Length: 262
Image (cartoon, rainbow, N blue to C red; front, side, top):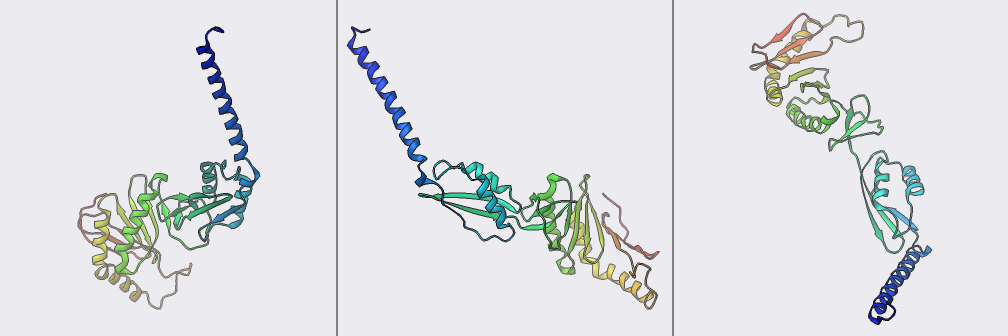
């Protein structure tokens, strides 16, 4: 090999190239870790309505590692998204030492089951709120569907000036609504929107007269021992051609004949 100049030339060039790459890597590594590139400013570009600033400060102090070049943005993004009320996080570097963070907060729409909240996007998240919100009941994978149907049912009930305080979807996919006047609506599994639309259309001519008759015949009587004049009203809409309404504190119910369907 020593008597072959071409081979020696190739070997020397290869070794020189390897040494050059190693030197370049070392220089680049040294330059990227210079103190001049340390992150000095972390700015939040969005106004915070629910997120506690102390949680942001703790996250910056404990989870933000590296400098302008070496900070792991994906890991940092996931850490910030674990903060209560944070839905989505985006990050952007600004040379040479600033990191801009944009937070999107959850907007709570309702309580979810016995714990947690559900957002306007139909996403379940863990947080606490003092707001008076409706209650959603369902399986963990049905939050988006319940949210969508809540919006549809709310729009249908607008003519009655009634709001939904509780909506539930059973494991058998049966819908049930509770309104702010205490009325319980059983919609069943099929044609729930059509059934509710039929109820809304005849409500002024059916349920309201029953309520008025009850109030007329019980006017001046002593209230119930629990302080209420009447208990909740139950309306079963699982009929093909009508529904049945029942005022539980009376022996009378209003029935509209029709074949029952689930």
